[in-house]
Every structure is written in C-alpha cells, then in structure tokens.
Length: 387
Image (cartoon, rainbow, N blue to C red; front, side, top):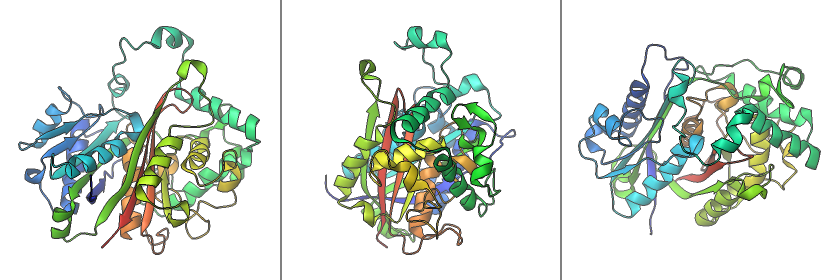
C-alpha cells in the first residue's frame, strides 16, 4: 500500500479517579474530545477500534450503539493489553490505506482504581497455561521483578540506574496539572522506598488509575481538509512474545521485533528521533525497552537512562514528558493511550512549554502489553509532522 494515514485528533481523559463515571462514559467522553480536537463529529466515523476494555457485547457493538455510531463499515477488537491502542491505530492506518474506511476512531477507558477488579480482567477461561501457573499465585509485580533481577545479574544494572527512570518522570510530571504524582523525587527517595517485589520498590511501580483517551485516524485527503497539524504515521509494526517452551529470555521484549520493522518501514534512524513515549509499567520496563527499540545496546540501558538523560532539555532522549505511567496516569491497567497522546502533543508542539522538545518533527511511541517475562504484545509507531 502507498501513502500515509494521519492522526488528526487526540484526547487524554483528565480524570484519574472516576467514581462518578462509568467505563462506557469514559470511552464516550474521550471519543468526543478526540473528534472535537480533529474538527469532526460522531457522524463522520465509519470505523471503530476498541479492545476488551470497552464494555458491552459482541466486540464493540455495544459501545458503538452507546456512542451512536451508525455508519460503521469496519470494526476491530484486537486485544494486546497495554499496547492495544497503538496496535489498533496501526490497524486503522492500514484499513484507511486499503480503502476499508475513511475516519477511524480508537478509544480506551478503564476504572482499575475505583471499578470492579473482576471486570478489569479479560475472561481467561480455558487458557492452556492456567492449570500450570495459576496455583502458584502469579502476579504482575513478581513477573516484572524477575526481569529486573535477571537484567541486574546479567548486565550489572544498578539500583541507582533504575531510580533515574522515576526521577526523570517526576521532573516532567511537575508541569502536568493532571499528574497524580507531580512531586519531584530524588534517586535516594526512589531507591529507599518500600520494597514491593525485590528489586522493585514502590516508586519503581506505575500508578493504578481510572481514565482513558482516544485518537482519530484519517487519510491524507481528509487530513488536508482539516485545520489541524498533519501528523502522519510514518511507520508502525507489532510483534508478540511467549515462553516458547521455556526457550524465551527475561531481558528482552517483543519490542525488538516491532521496532526493527517500524524503523525499516519509516526509513529513519534512531538519531532522527527527537522524543520517545515508552511504556513504563515499571522502571526496568523502560530500561529494557529502550534497548529493544535500538537506542542503545542490550545491557547498556541502565547507563543510557542515568544522570538525567531522559529529562527534556537536559538529556539526549526526552522520554514520557507527561510524567508517564510512573507519575501521570496508567488508566485501567493499560498505558498505551497516554503514550500515543503525548507523542502527538510533542510532534504538534503542544506539550507543556517546560517539557516541549524544540523542533520536534519526528517521534516514536511504543506500547507494551502483558508481561515482558512470559507473554506480551508490543507495538512501535513512528510519527512525523508534515504541516
């Protein structure tokens, strides 16, 4: 397929604690915000993309009815956890370029803080791994702690290096009025916070919040007709990782494959990238992912993130200038939408002035879903401003 699709609308729901809103309402309000940002309406939408965080029946049909989407000719319910919004944005781009639709809406919403925890977990009945793993009480913190321990053992990554990821996020979050944790922290405060799952401490872990967001993807003809910046999806790729019968390692993610393909499709180098939105479920997630994305060699991620190298205006590669999942927002246990929205803000020049990257014409957004040590899905997307 030739040509490009464009992101013309982006919206991050401002709520972080939504006791007075339903999950459907968060999806709907996010959709309304993104469409307004694009200068479009619900009547313009002919394709809808939502993962299993969308409430209702029959794979998004219930949410389509809730939002009054009556002209749909394309529907996508791909489920890859936290990376799903980016995966579906890539699917939307390809659906547009193949002529299947003209205006694609992607929404995400969740209430992992104030909602029903059973509602937040996808139905896994019949999953082949459950009889072998469920009896041992598997949990997210322990799974990511194994990755951190292995990285420390294999490459000598230090406690201080992990802490720098949180420090950078806090320096950005202080300028975000919606951030849950806007206070700047020190390396010592992160390193000495209470232990959760060795070596992960409390400040190494992402937030648990309500919220969501949405984006709107269109073709070039519609993008040119709107009075909005033209942000094209220059490259996008997805990949998955599973245990492969025990042959899979703990210190890499599916991002090493999705990134290689996305950069090849975009035809750009890492030196061209001005900003990166990187999934930050834990501090070690960022270290491992930056290696997999190709910004440094495997095992060198700890050194790469140290000494403020991720802080906008200070470091070589500004990362998560909204504060990320560590300080700003991690809605519904899925942090993909905030990553994509902040990438759009940066490439548009609409980030907070204190963190806006100068001449930010080319950015990367990366989502991680599932667990990096066992089963997960990754998506890498490269955005470029052309107008």
